Length: 378
Image 1 (tube, rainbow, N blue to C red):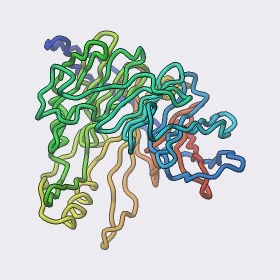
Image 2 (cartoon, rainbow, N blue to C red):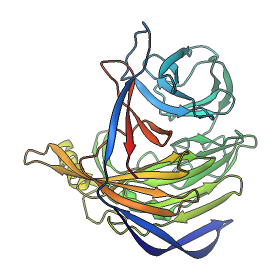
Image 3 (cartoon, rainbow, N blue to C red):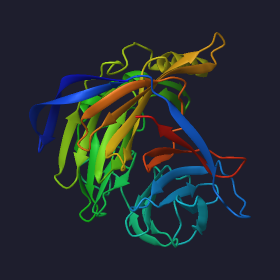
């Protein structure tokens, strides 16, 4: 069942330090009695042997027929045909020498022309599928102008590359603390700019840290960056608000959404510094009972974006026993079009993509790569 109501979306756009706003009336559906079916697909890997749990990073080819999974343990990119669910090839990369890839890759991105971004906090580079280093990216506050050294000591945090490979887009952050803004770096001139993201500041309230000696551990929400259809979305689990950066226009916009069935952000107050790791676990669970917003997915068949959110529930022993799960859909220009609640829905969304209107979520099947396929009824 679908209920219809009308709202006004307020869009704040900033370019060159200026802001403009516009209101537009749109129709938002309330989705009721949502259901879905699942199917589990195992990838045909023939007689290959590797750890199916060792993937860190994924990306679709531009035509959507191939998914590339980076296996950090093997230092390989695995090429999988998503139509036949077959492992096409394992592409090895060097751990030493002139084509060495970064150790413990944190960020992986598929680029046009069978090229890939591989990065960690200290090293970044663009590599070909054959394992050759195409371009080494020396991105530090010493080599790139426009950034405060203290506030942006990790300049390559959440690094992505524009489709034309001319700019790096990052969320620079300090050694200790939140992000300093949206970093936009011209790769040729090594000149950059750091744009403030005040709507993301709420995230710092919902991240708890324990420090001991020179080390620390944290839990909670983080600011995230993802690339969708050539644009970049900055989002956080703590708020439904997002920023949208369009590199073709060099414009940054703040988008807010008039959710009716969920809070627009977390509301509680929690310590952000604790003196024991046990307290981190306790506070993380308390924060987990509040709304947490996820990443965006592009559903090409239905020409819409989709996003999920959840509130966790725990038993008396602190074990998660489910929760409340929500889905939101958006138009191509990121206007909220529908929202609803699922019953007992909790997919693994760390690595996933849409194909033919269905959500494919990576899940190993009997120790080999596989996907759980979700078919929704709306």
